[in-house]
Image 1 (tube, one colour):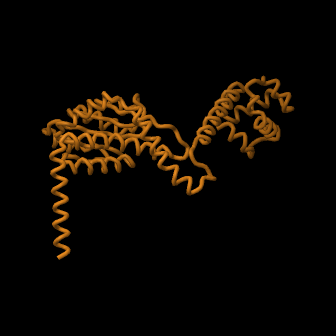
Image 2: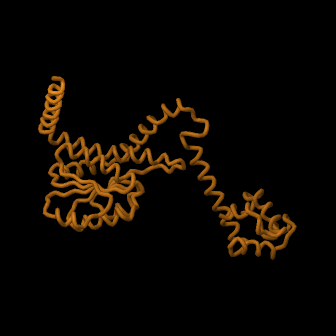
Image 3: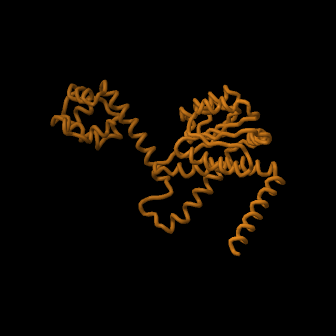
Length: 285
């Protein structure tokens, strides 16, 4: 970063320090100045300015102007992101209590609006005759995959959660019909998920991806890709919104599966309740 280098003056000569101090005060004006004007304003010479640019690992004065202009734009972009954050150092605990549900609601609303209903109908239809379901993720998304696998298992679905590709498992279960795999990636560019999706698709598995960037690496290797665009955040707030959005999609599939075999799932639930009541009665005697 050029601006950071200008602020670190330890290795600068007295003329270079003079240049750096002037530039830091006049960063916005640098793009419209000529090298002669800068030399005159800093009581230096063109040769000193060129040597200074070389010390900053730049080709010359034009490069200095371009790099400073780019860093100023990037800095303004980051400042805007920070200004848009829902919290700051003055946010109270009472405000946080009210704010978190609003973050969830906003994440759900954005996810719902971004959904392609026809695509979701196609995916739900694939789940109607599911023979085997595998859900893949890494890090946080593996935790989400594990929770989703637990939910589907309560409906009697044959399901596993994985944090990486297990080729032996895929080959050993290749005879299973109507196999589906869901791969999770917040960025949509997780290389392990993209590689796994490619392998599974080649093995005849119907592959569904969920994450950001519909043009990313994962989307290129899936049969269906559910794109959930996430707003950039400095304070990692996108982790909250991404988790909420991905869980929303998985829960749509879960509830659709429950409704698809409603009578059987209702009977199963009633049986569990009866067993719990019988157990409680035995414990009370």
